[in-house]
Structures are given as structure tokens and as C-alpha cells.
Amino acid sequence: MFSELVKATRSFRNFDPDYRLSDETMRELIELCRYTPSTANSQSIKFAFANTVSTCEKIFPMLGWAGYIKEDKPPYDGNVPAAYILVCYDTDIANEIEIDAGICAQTIVLGAMDKGIGACMIGSFNKEKAAELFSLPENIKPRLFIALGKPAETVEIVDIKDGDVKYYREGKKKHIVPKRTTDELIINTHQ
Image (cartoon, rainbow, N blue to C red; front, side, top):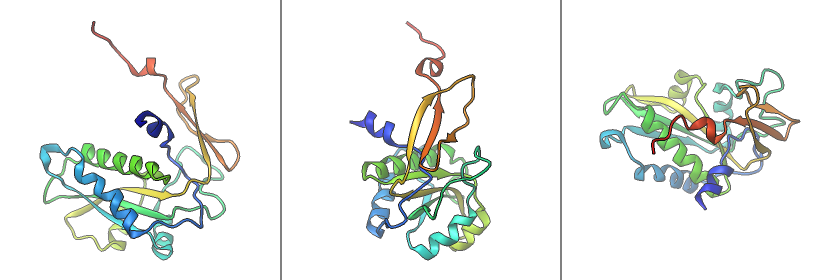
């Protein structure tokens, strides 16, 4: 059921270090984006991916993980992602890309979870180094990384208390994420 897939799809930050993703799986996840809506059907979103240990080791230090957690940040104990998808946009096609990038990223993350693969979208990263690593041409701009792997932690959703949206850890294997209630999300009804 789709609602269960959405509820299971969390931002995982610890991954099984022995799990690998194949080129075929990476291509399948990216292919899902062929079928997503796109502003004016421009299809300006492009992708690069990495699933080898050596390239993933080069990407990891570029990333800003878990901004709200100030000490003892995950991933822990070598539980780093098995693969990454770099979401980019082609400036020769479009510059207004936030909606399309979001649609594609969420589609990939949902598609990954449907396969039992956890993900974490990361917008805080060194874009220049990413462009250099993937040898991106001038017109292809990096926007977002999606870290992928088999989850090695649980993520628990709780209701927000006292307006505090900051996620936090309970030990090394449990990530707690406060979420607004449905009543807080609905600002008006017209009957």
C-alpha cells in the first residue's frame, strides 16, 4: 500500500557497510524519473551516480550530514552509504528547477524504499568538488545528493512538542524525527 511505503521512507543515516548496489539498480531508480511530471515538460534534471567503494569514499567527505546534530554525528562505525545519486540540472534547458528536482528526488527515494534500500537526501555538499569528481560540463549544475544503502538503524516519527522540529538520536541505532500533526498541516477547509 502506498501510504505504508511513504511512512517507511525516512532519511536514513546509517547503512550496512557490506551491502552494495548494482549498476542495474542505480539505473532502475533513475529511470523512474522519466515518468515524473516536469515543468513545461522541460526535463532539465540529469543524474550521475557512484556505487564503487573508491568513488563513494571520495564523495563522503564532501557532504554535510545531520545539521541539527552537533556532536557524534552519524553515519557511525563505517556505516556509510553504498551508493550515491547526484541530482543535477541542465542550464541549457532550464534554471527554475527546484520543483522538478524535488519530484525526481522523492521518486528515487520512494523507489529505493520499495526495493528495501534506504536513502537520505543531502543538499549541503561541496558542489564544486562534486562537479569536478563527476567531470560535469559547465551547463550541468549539481543540486542534491541522494545517499543510498541498506538501513542499519531505525527511524521513529514523533509528534512535535513545543514547536521543536529538530531531529535527534537515541543511541547509535535510533533516529527520532518530530513531525507536525495533520491538524497543523491543514490551514483552512472550505465546505
